[in-house]
Image (cartoon, rainbow, N blue to C red; front, side, top):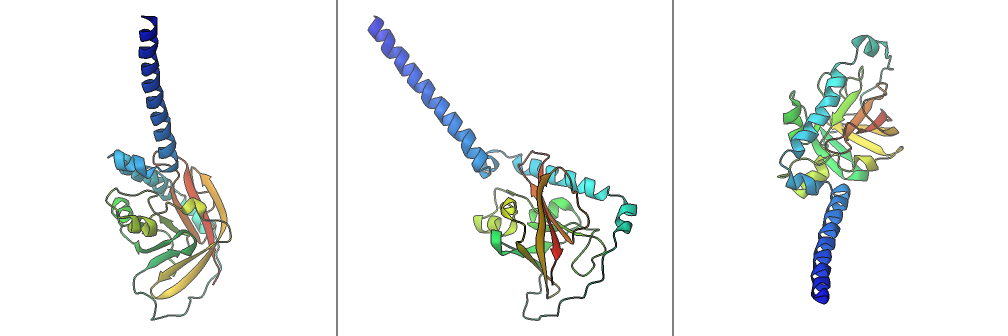
Length: 216
């Protein structure tokens, strides 16, 4: 009787142990590969979009008086190069980004297209205000892996100080260099020529920011 009871308990413990191991592995996998969660949860992308737009609200509330105090030196335009694409494109070779920049006024529509420039702030041609560019870190389930690689900021945390970023705008090539990298809940440096940002995790108030200055 005792022997049968021990066998039954052993099987129960074995099954329970396997379930615990599977559960722990799943948690670890989602931590390292959050896109798994995006595939399982229908609301994950919407939550990430809302988190990105929280930052957009903070950007829009930035005081105009503070913006006017920023005096940026006049810069010349890079030469027109008709061999460059006619589309406005963001290229970050070190992390594989190479995508057209959406200029939609609506954040949801712009972020769904991938790389999105925040309206009402700078453009490469007009540098009175910083250029602010955002993108989903994980994006939509229906995005292809190739599109996700080129048009999301999944690897933005890997962008380091000294790395270069290219913006092709109206067939002119603008080069920028990262001078500050941080995770924060808000933009801390509006003196930058270019600010890139995305979410750290889909529901986290912490965002990934990269601050760049133009170098050409």
